[in-house]
Length: 354
Image (cartoon, rainbow, N blue to C red):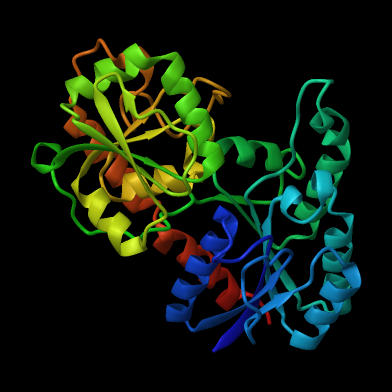
């Protein structure tokens, strides 16, 4: 049984997609005879165990934990803001660099969930852009295997070193996967709003600004009720005549059963970033029709296509085959499911000189 270490910003039950992603990945890697331990930057409600240790923001603590574990493979789940204020995680990169120098057989797998942030001059992200980019570039050069979630990130990373290969593999569902899904005409007349407070907040804001558009589409789908799953937030009681029921945080089993029978799932997410959304992945893995009215940040080489993988607001008047769209997103997910990522990482580990 090979042993590896995952370095993550958070770990379940703490809220945070990266921690859940890493845990699911580790569970599947066991099937490939690869056992995982976790070093976590911020534990919060998570309990320390023999497999889960806290290093916080301290370089010395992380370096000590790495030395004591005597691991030859690290999987670093990278998002700068998860490891340091303003994403300036110099300590993290320093620790990784020191660990790599100690042994030529050490291998670093980096999964770039985020690379760096940018913004207008009045935002802090404008001023931290260059140091964040420097850190990401340094980490990229230290990495032996690089994986990211969408073409936009892949394009950015490739500019750091055109000779180094960047692997593309989508985020996967954190509520499981099913082998077959019900056709839309056999599902209940419900739509889902799923995710954390921030994602739901921006979705509800757009709903309130564009109620007619949402209502028009929901009526076409014969939706009679909307169910909100996840941490409760300020939400309208209804969209026009369609009631919204807030259920709060529920178990995976409950959510899975709900998704099996739901016709549609609403989200407000930049289209070029949809492949890195666990909400989108969860909808897709159950053949739930995805509704996304967000137009921000359209990348020129985008994986998800309006009218093919999801419904956008410009398509409301079109005579669409909703079932074909649901079929295509489910098929797309099956090709890019957790099995793909597990296979890529396990093959690299087994073929490396360790």
